[in-house]
Image 1: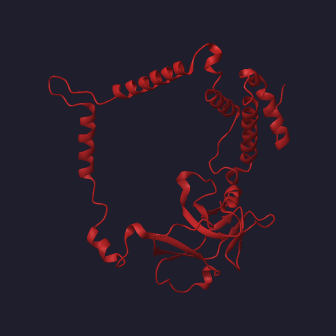
Image 2: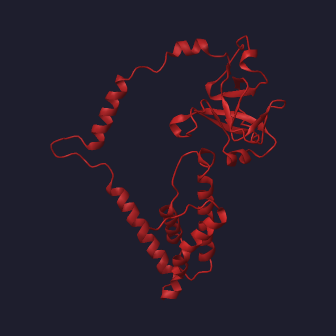
Image 3: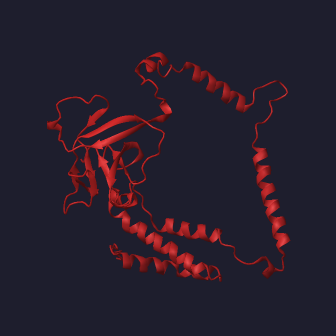
Length: 277
């Protein structure tokens, strides 16, 4: 019986992938081809290494198997010119003509999928039927909100396009908060994964040893009226309902101050969770 032993070392994983690309080395004689091939192999190795860390490595689970590696190599092959036109006794003007013919073929295909005219009996085209049905469904939908009620709740002088959510990470626990904020909401019960919080400064720091999740203090979320962009020094931390970080479980985001580049925490897979079970 043949048994395949799982590889848990980046070095051995890379050597394993390099063995797979030996058959591809003779695909092209261009000097750019081997570096491109080894770059794809190295990228695949890193992707595989991060995969074993679960949601911290990649928020959406995926195999990243040998078929994906082969598809990546094929993609590079398709975008690498095999040989100079002059080597097959063709001038560059012939190549230009070939490109024009290819573009014309694409345009002809687009024109062929344009709306077809109705029959001689005055029947509706497919596009007309779809448009009419869409209009009928739209008329049956209820009004999303009462405009007058929204006006009464609005801030005087605030435009909806310039309203931005802000947050403040407090030093207080839930039991220490007794009153509602004048505006906005207090949020509690979130857990931080992939990093720790410096309670004194409110900034992200490296996670503590053997601590998988850290309970957050109360976070104050409120709105401001501004047209200024977001501070690029802030880390936009995603919030998920469960540890499985899929699009269906995404809630929103919270901004954290940090002394590191925000990309540092992105690569760490730092996120907030509503539930850790």
